[in-house]
Image 1 (cartoon, rainbow, N blue to C red):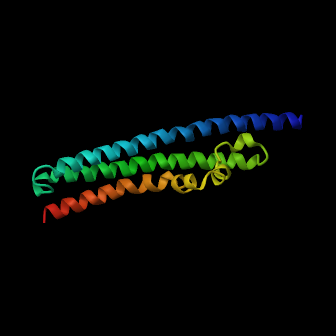
Image 2 (cartoon, rainbow, N blue to C red; image 1 turned 30 degrees about the vertical axis):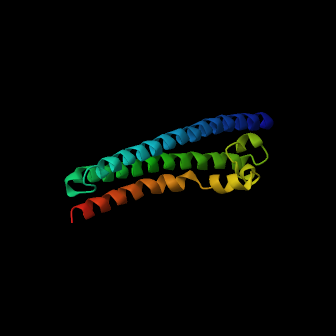
Image 3 (spheres, rainbow, N blue to C red; image 1 turned 135 degrees about the vertical axis):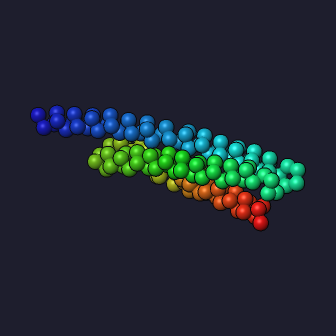
Length: 152
């Protein structure tokens, strides 16, 4: 009877694990899309700003828009990253309950990454959350500086 209960618990936990893994993995394309759109919009705004006489006070609305859009993206990407981190923590808790069952460790690729070629480790080893979380506020700050300097 106890063996049956353990089997049911494991099956239930594995179903939860699969659901969390799906939620966790779905955040990646969302973050990528948000970053690509952020880069495209900022490139467009910078191009528009540089036309004509360059960065002048008559284009302050463009600089303000760049600041606001980048600030909104900061919070949007931050929220997506927060949820992915929450899913990851839940995955890790379930995995810890089954240390010898590889089915509960699919999301953990640390060992496999350490076995990859050194070039891939160096170029691909920076967690995306670092540039995802710092690029949008960097753009916001840059637009704010341009706005202030253009109006001095």
